Structures are given as structure tokens and as C-alpha cells.
Length: 69
Image (cartoon, rainbow, N blue to C red; front, side, top):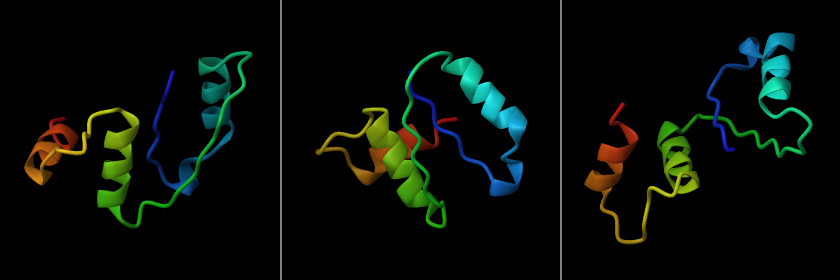
């Protein structure tokens, strides 16, 4: 399972930690933290993580996938 969270550090609390522990019960996990000063970089990383971006994808195709929500 792979989950991305985008939140403010002020939102980090014991409830967040407990939800992660419940979601990944008894499993080893990797935690990676990055700031989102550049939301485009965050969105690009998300697309790559989700396997949505190929080497030949155009910027327009990437924008359609990233901002489809």
C-alpha cells in the first residue's frame, strides 16, 4: 500500500500517528518528508510515484492527470 499525505505540520498529532499505525498494522514502513513550497514539484513526484507519468507525456497530459480531481 502507498499513501501520500499533504498537510501542515500543525496538523501532526497523536491521532495522525495512530491512524498510520492502524493503516499499516504490524508492518515495516518508510516515511519520507518534504516541504511543498513548490506544489508543482509535489504534484510531479505524486504522478511519478503513482506511475502516471511516462517519459513521453506532455505537460498538458500531466496536468489532466494531476488535476482531474
